[in-house]
Amino acid sequence: MLERIASEVCAAKPETIVEIGPGQGALTELLLASGADVHAVELDPLMIAALQRRFPGRPRLHVHHTDVLDANLAQWGPAALAGNLPYYITSPILERIFAAGAAIQPAVLLIQKEVADRLGAAPSSRDYGYLSVTTQTRAAVEIVMKVPPGAFRPPPKVDSAVVRLTLSNQQPAQSFLDFVSLAFKQKRKTLRNNLQHVYPGADWSKLPERGLRAEQLSIAQLQLLHAKLS
Image (cartoon, rainbow, N blue to C red; front, side, top):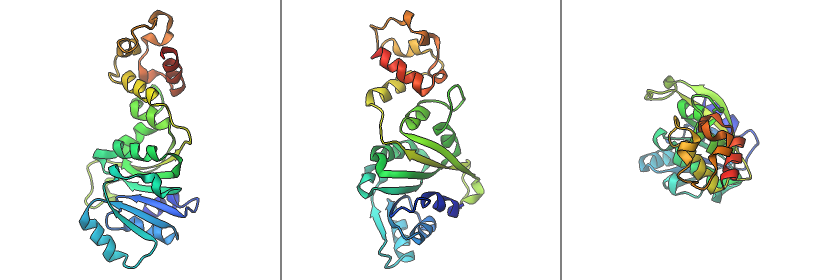
């Protein structure tokens, strides 16, 4: 599985790779074998010590002792990115990756399967929501493979998946992201009920979307409704 992840990251033969959360360096070993410079972002000092013991004198390995949420990932670009993301901060890390824009290409991430399903979900499906829309407006999403708990030590209580994100050169306006957040705020409510207090001047009687829920609209339809209301 590590070899499959490395092959996805290195498919386009990047000269630079950013690795989020290298841990003790199992994936780092394979990334370095590609000949790329690897910038490893690690917060845990014990893991940094383990990396230094495992890779003494490796000029292509650059270990950065910092929190990824404070890091400007674009500073090492253009670069491919690999990440074994902690489940509890997956969304904030995704925001850091999106902030880097096309400087990161692609991003190959090991994440909780439930989150992976939400990233690539289609309209009207159970998993489609705010995270689906805000991800798919900024990147193409491909689920590469599922990873069972037994692949980890110790095994977690959830299934995982590897996701490949191909980032877009164009980023959505913040006003649209704010609109989507409000539209999905209470998923069981109609768009009119979720949004009418924000757009009090809108003539909802002329909007065919008024009785639908946000999860029933495609990204293109949400963009059109945002344009109408704006």
